[in-house]
Image (cartoon, rainbow, N blue to C red):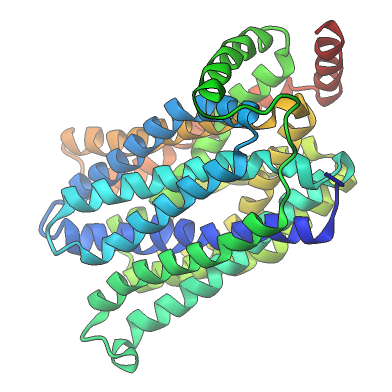
Length: 435
């Protein structure tokens, strides 16, 4: 299809507006709060944090195992949009079902959250891979950043509305804030379902040379997956980038998923933490676009390095916070770089992979991202439990746990230093000529 088609770009970017409602209201906002105060009512704060970390990790494992296989099948069957629709609406149904979970039923809440997270992450594999069909190489940084920018704005708008419902439940006909929070899960499902439609209508999926369907697509996809494993031995730059990305995005995802839980564990009020999350969303909206331009100005690689350094600073400073105002400052700082590191990592990767296998390669990309999300929450929760078992207070244990995340930014940054974008493009050209 013709690259840089404005309608296609708009439809593609609007999906970030759609699914970011789940990322913001559910993953980062209400689910951690509600899980600790309602579904895990009466449990020790360190235990509830470990349970939440386990839930995120289980979801990560499932997606990580499925991602490259699904990507390979979708490439051979020209079925990226079909897979996206399946996973997205699975996430919609499971998220909406959280409305029905009663107080104390944390196992059911975990199960629905895990399946919804699989839907969210699974759909993102095919959403990410479609970028190579709507944007030319020159526009990849901007279009990728535009998607994240839409996501921050859309997620922030719905989240602000949901926060309003919880702060003033009577205005909306709710008996209390708890009922308003439960209803917010329904609004996320509806928002996600409606704003997925523009992508399905406006984005035309490039057809593969020999499109297949059914069992043939699955069989061919698995054969292609095996072939790609062999290709990665020759695409050393892709392999090195994926290793670096696996590490530094671990810290990013862990902070997104666990920040509110961490704040509550060290004594901050949930309302203050929700305000901080809103700050991150609305700062992230213009900052994601700004990082897209920054990548075009100083280079994508340098811009990613800046974001990694900022996150390293955040993971260390976070352990010493004493007031909610420090949390607000950190929220602003995170908002400045969060969308940028996600958007530029996606566009950087898109520049160094074979375009005719974009879904498959983005399957590997998402696989490593989700395996990272497996280790981050477990390391954070495990560090807290370990320190608590040594006789320290829950406050100290929680502060040590956030600092443990810094190791992922350090090691990821070191590996990323050795990634050469130009060498990566040459490796792809050589491989395509050889085939």
